[in-house]
Image (cartoon, rainbow, N blue to C red; front, side):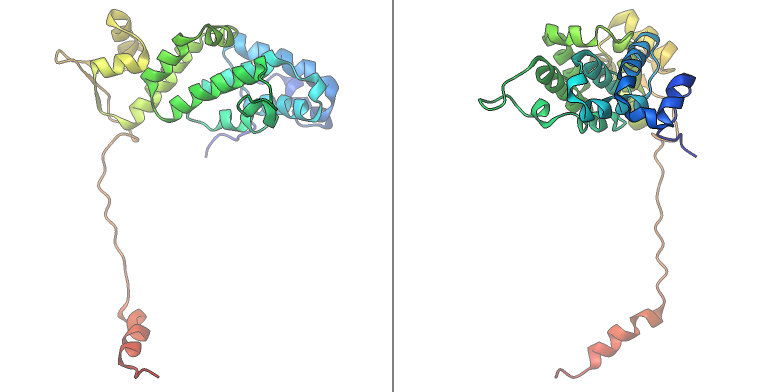
Length: 241
């Protein structure tokens, strides 16, 4: 059985009480949720359900919206890809933040930040991992956005490695280095100690067999009784009207 969407093993008791009661819609709990987002960024925990509750409060009370908690929530959602959490968070943001800037909709710092993070999410969804790291290094704004999230790059490498391990049995070293944004001994240490992969002398990174990347043949058997074709056969001998 999978883990329930609204569960979080590291969730504090007072947050659990708010989420399970009417106070989750109380604007006065906004600051509590904001402090909880800061805690998640510092100790590398993650609570999507609580973060969505804060975004919902912002949706009901736009005057309470703060840019930093919003961007931190989106950055934390990136660290759990390929889950749909980032998209869930985006759908709770105002339309003017998601729309490209125009004469009628001027650009704002929050809108620019959200669109930058959405671009990173798109690259991850496309499995363009090298492009993801290139984009992350291309703009100082990205450095500011991820600064509050402790261990962001390490978390992303782990998630990329997990995704790669689910679909590959072997990867050329140069490709894997680009995907993980690591080279040399640092790369070898990560893939061997963290991922449990091997690197041979031919420059191929080998991924152990698991239930996701194991090639299995599929045999499809269809049992159709002759009686089921009776109507079709009768129609073939019927005279046209």
